[in-house]
Length: 79
Image 1 (cartoon, rainbow, N blue to C red):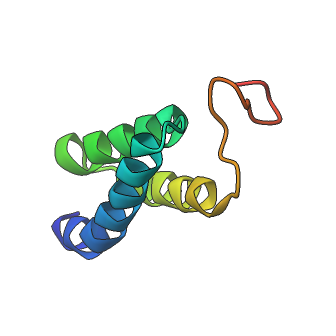
Image 2 (image 1 turned 90 degrees about the vertical axis):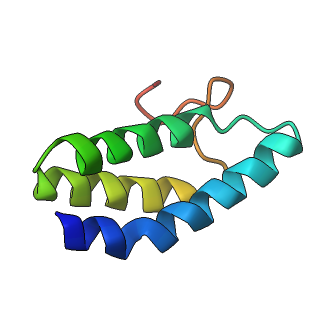
Image 3 (image 1 turned 135 degrees about the horizontal axis):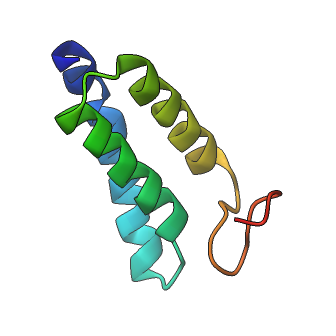
């Protein structure tokens, strides 16, 4: 888990920088922020490497979306 944690830090920082920029422009980044919080929790408080990998893949998918789901733009499941 430590190796994975260290390996994904550059990806996490890049996504956080993008979110900071989006938020400065007034965009809603709540969904992606929450997914990042979950990833940090998995990395720092569990040994669930498989869950952390799945969570990271979800985050990368959300981050690559032109319009990630948010309170005003829910995903296909409505959340």
